[in-house]
Amino acid sequence: MQIGIKHPTLGSVTLYPKAGENGQIEPGGYTTESDPKGITGSGEAIYKQTIGRWVVETPPIAWKRSGVDTLNQVKNIANSFEESDFTFELADGTIWVGKGKIVGEIKGATYDSTIPLKMEGGGKLTKI
Image 1 (tube, one colour):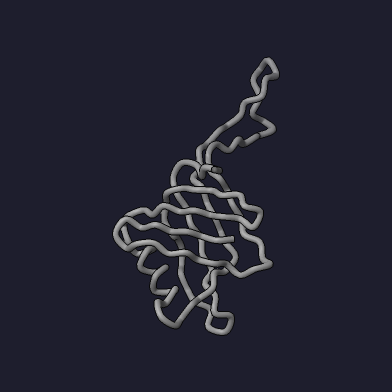
Image 2: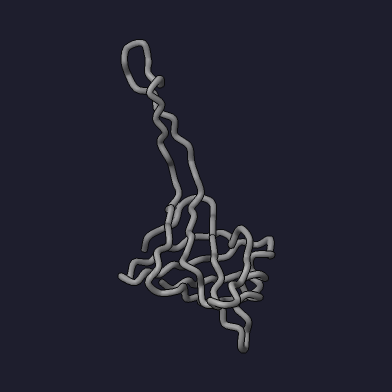
């Protein structure tokens, strides 16, 4: 996986997660919930639909400490009030794009030299 982040004022950065580990992609959009008691008097089901944001939790990214410090780059982008354009390229060549922010706590693991990341945005990720 490769993560491209283009921030409107802080510039662009490419991040590389740790190989051989899974991440999770929730493309966003509608989720349908079902309740066994959600039924009309005529027996028709009642469904509840809610809209959710997109979410990507990557395997921990590599923390480069020499030169430009990856932890500081990620922290600065997360601290900004502006959203960034994200590109997620998977090992099989699949590419997802979306606009959003890095969210949650950002802590570097000193022994592993990695940083766990979670990104979210409104609407849906687009597969290109």
